[in-house]
Length: 293
Image (cartoon, rainbow, N blue to C red; front, side):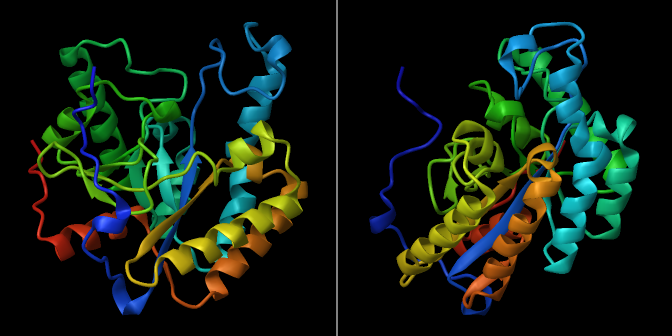
């Protein structure tokens, strides 16, 4: 079947985007704060035990994130005065409320990221998914004090109905499609796609390709320099995707610090959040937000 969720509009044929203060690149950190069920396989550093129940090797590796890694990442973000755009599993509200408290103190942006990273809604009926998404959104709203405006599915998963169901709940953008350097309108009234990255992503870079910390810093620099060059006539978005169980490892922390220092000190960069990117794009293009139900 053809994709009816969005149309093809080449980036070279669009009206220019202008970011606040004359910035050329809007930069945000997509910080994945996730919960994993102990009896289901998931992202693994060693596939040989991934199907076991329990799987102490891989589960423990992931669990390092909320226990230790996130606090290193928080210190680094604070050092560069960067507010995280948090991709939040709603189960974190029950299992790791201290992290949510730390984020509330820092005025983080909260996006819905499913219930946990062990459940995907891919096989749900429309009614099942509506109930699932409603529970996720309401749980995050209660825990954070804010109703999320954005969504990213666990493992960037959706059904054909997800954007429409999210719009019913008052959300107005998704990160799942990762196919652009600018926001764009989906064929769902009031719903945008905002750029996210599966390539500029600590999971893909360190685990998928085995790059070093120094390689990571250079890739961040190269990404920014090219987007800055591209943005001479129209603004671009640079998303840096982070997972505390990956980037929060001790031997990688200094490289995250170096990368963020380069971005924060670079001229023409708007240090922002995904919410603010969506809101500015929507206001500048005259689009209406969906009404929550």
